[in-house]
Image (cartoon, rainbow, N blue to C red; front, side):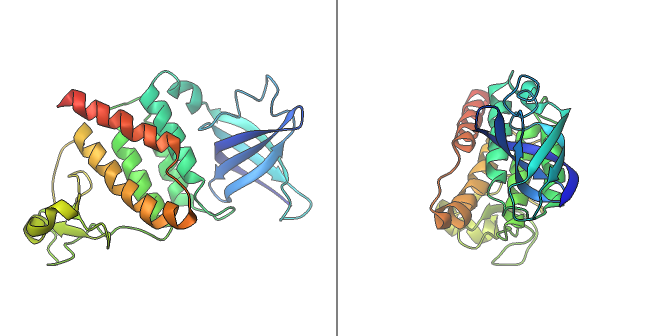
Length: 246
């Protein structure tokens, strides 16, 4: 068995004295594990950094085996993000959440969005909103997509400013007026019935609250898992940014 693909490094664990087990999110082969010989060497350690974009070749005698990985760096997003704590938290959060995907289950569209987000990590006014959209796409790929196209109560596509925490459907301002304390805020950059400019820091926090609620209630709690620490840190940093901008 052998395949070659491009991927994003999700995690790396030492194995023996010199090797490492790398977990990568590939375009055509999904989340995959493989043993990298010399993975702890000076040559490969900079390549095997969480968030890096790599070319990978996987080989194994049988499909169910761990297999061996050969990796070559395409883009070193990890080094780029090191200079910005928020970007590093975003990169780490994306990689941690991608590990929720079933092993070896292809999600090429989500992979493409992940690369798009990573490509904007040097633009702090852009990538946080893209990260929220990626988390929405992740929920959709996991089978828990939200319906933000029309009001759950009236069917209207206008003035959508809430989301039901139970159904995951949008709710208009009029329909949700009496229940607003129990509804999640839908930021303008996600609402299909509203026209808005760039996402504000407050909008990003609202978006992270929205996606975070459904990641916890529909994915993590049923698995008896907690929100990844990197995702918690990302939200904390975005809350601080919103407070400074207020």
